[in-house]
Image (cartoon, rainbow, N blue to C red; front, side):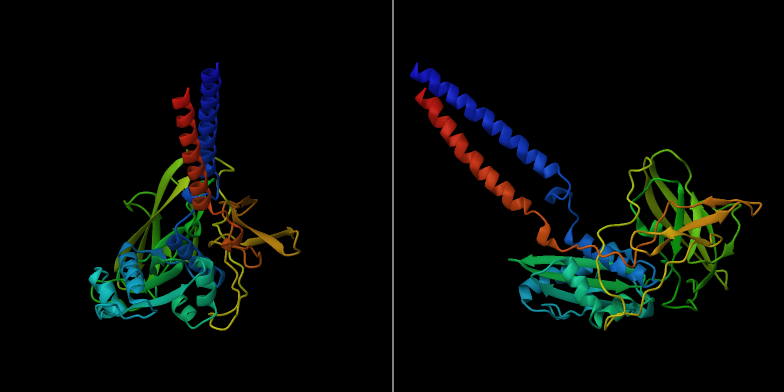
Length: 377
């Protein structure tokens, strides 16, 4: 009889253990869990681009080559134990970027690097950048690409940001780099050649015209003046990934082609703006300047609507039809807000790794007890 009771107790422990395992899996699947969080590199990349957009600058395109150079130095800084642009092998950031095979303008010299180290997060790093001379580098309109490196040494975090501009590389951004959209009507943000406006040899200088296509074939597509923002329709209305291609042309008929991708999802499944936001006052020391409103795409005058809850009027971009009559709403893309404070600090986030370790330790104890009771039975 005693053995039956002990066996039943062991079965109960087994069921409790299965329940605990389910809780762990559910916790890991919840939004905000470690598995769902973006990397520190990705968070810093997004925050830098948000601040650039708030100041009227185009985002920076992510470069695998610049990421490689930045990550190399971030890991090296852990070994060095101090913040320095000089690597443990004596290399400069120009050398590291060149060795990553990033061929920048000016014989490889149109590059730069900024560093941050501390116990904080990516938000702390970008806040410090924004209030110091490093922001003049991060907001330099000549740079079009960025790489981010990250390393952690027992809680001390190292961020390395590398920037550059290559000949013929003019990134474009669908809805300012959003990953998804719930409408095929999108806005294209274009960059231009500000690092070498005159170009060099066969390499394009500052573009004056563009043509846009949903395929890499531009046959029959008319040229139009270069604009910072252009309205566009994706190739279809079914959910899936869509590409948009832009061909740039300068006054010497030199051209370059850029591509961007976005996923079309069902209505209501796409967030209106990239997240997370960061609340920083514009015009602080070290910043590039005050707030600059985001313009509507060409041909789409901004029509003010009723004031929002905070008393600030919201604006909806609209486009006129072919006859110039009734305006067609074009509200699928929302520029980043310049006045909505959102805390991105990590103080309120849950430490899922610690929780998981605690649950697993408890599960191990329960397993031991269950095994002991089964042997007694």
